[in-house]
Length: 193
Image (cartoon, rainbow, N blue to C red; front, side, top):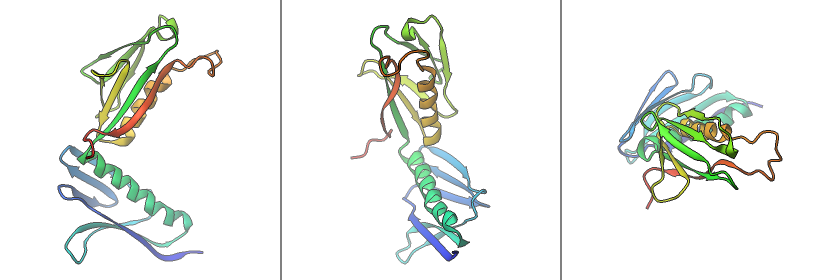
């Protein structure tokens, strides 16, 4: 069954500029600018104003199947993530977990890559480069903690995943050998009151 028209709207906060050009959405805010391509989705994006003069983003799907109708909410969530990124930014915190050999990590290349040493006592140096726009620092207050900051949630979370995957225990029972670097907290750079 096809629905003739399904649409959803979302509010655009003050201090955020949104440009739409052929399903490429550009969001600009106090922390920077992010773009996202929605060309693969068969949706209409419009900037509208409601009765009170508040700016809104409206997404329509004409004659869409259930899949197309579901993609409206997905696209809105992506735009919400972009808006949060350019206003508050994203911060992931990671902790070192080890039973015996202390993991030694040093941040190189002006906070854009990390070198992990002594993982399970191995001599191998594991080097992980952060994705573009993601910075990494050692936490001052907490021992054995890394802090990843960036505007794009996908790049920040993928950088965290790359670090996590580099410290993968091979040929051992992972229920017993829990060593690694794991994400401990996800949030925004600007703390919410």
